[in-house]
Length: 481
Ligand SMILES: Cc1cc2nc3c(=O)[nH]c(=O)nc-3n(C[C@H](O)[C@H](O)[C@H](O)COP(=O)(O)OP(=O)(O)OC[C@H]3O[C@@H](n4cnc5c(N)ncnc54)[C@H](O)[C@@H]3O)c2cc1C
Image 1 (cartoon, rainbow, N blue to C red):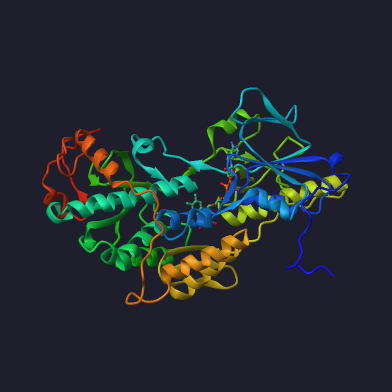
Image 2: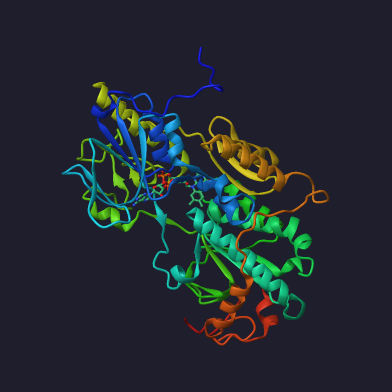
């Protein structure tokens, strides 16, 4: 008898595997990694291609950005998938093209020469990417949070700016403004985590600094936060954030972003030392050159079997796939689509009929902060507060691929959230904090700054005026960037 904890499958492919049909999976995210898993018992050779050697659990990236988790806690080595799927091989590369006529994928592998790999079946699962909607200055000054390295950049910037501000706090009384553009789940989660950090840890770790120095503002074009949720949950999220001292600026779009400010669509200017972009995703432009049909939002148009329309053998899953009635770009749809596309290929290879894809809604969740989360679960109803938070914690830990990840996340979140304010011992996960470099950039940016010491771009040194309205300063005749 095989004891599951004492043995594992061999990672060598089957002896006759070389002649099996070749499946390329483009992208090892939620859809791609689960597609690999669903091909475990199929008589196919699988090549998983990703630019990164790891799969990212994006729902917890905000914890990396706010120093609650290590980056390795939310990423898992893709080669580890071969432990369960011996016929899978991983190949690192940047997919630059797909030629459905010749059935090849072209890769940039960092070396000269053409790198093409042929396939019998293809699953396109390369996800979406950040979009700035053409907002001037956003690409240069705002910090997106779509990848592990972007989350680390945010974390290191926050701590560098905190160190810089702490040196000046005694005589400058300058605030450190973090503006989060986008009031969807990601924006709400990062705002809540920063607010919790200020309430629980800032005064202990930075005793020389007034905790009110750190100001967190959420900017949202629409009039409400997290429109994916029902109205009373939207209100709950707004109240919880405001109770935690987060400023909400709703009903305003961002017109442009500068080094230390954002300009809103009514031409008011908000101070923003760190602008975090959590405002939207789009399909990468390069996909339009792949000769595959796209819907009006750029997603690959797929039929009921997730096959790309008009292209037998080519499937799409996850954020990049759009059925006639497209699913939200979330983890559960991606997981289920990845598994369904893989099962459709396994059926084709076995000469069996494919089953049409049917999505099972398992619910939607978002966390606002310590002991505050919301969950809408079909047949169960809505959960909020500590109950919702416990459900959110349980789901996020169990849904991770990789035992190490599950244990590490559980332990680190326990350290972060365990105990009370009186017993909590803060120990954020910090990295390369270079406040000297941050101070140098702050000085050099003086001509472009509107706030703070030495600002020369239309602002004044009068910080009291800037602080009159928390996080905001109305400017009747704004100086444009
Ligand atoms: C910050 C953040 C928080 C989120 N929070 C939640 C949440 O709480 N709940 C929820 O349900 N959803 C959440 N989402 C959405 C969820 O993460 C996505 O819907 C999901 O990741 C989509 O899965 P996917 O497999 O389609 O794409 P991804 O998971 O994005 O995977 C795509 C993969 O393709 C690779 N790739 C892309 N282009 C190429 C290329 N040209 N060549 C090689 N490799 C390539 C990438 O490296 C990546 O590994 C969040 C997303 C973000 C960014």
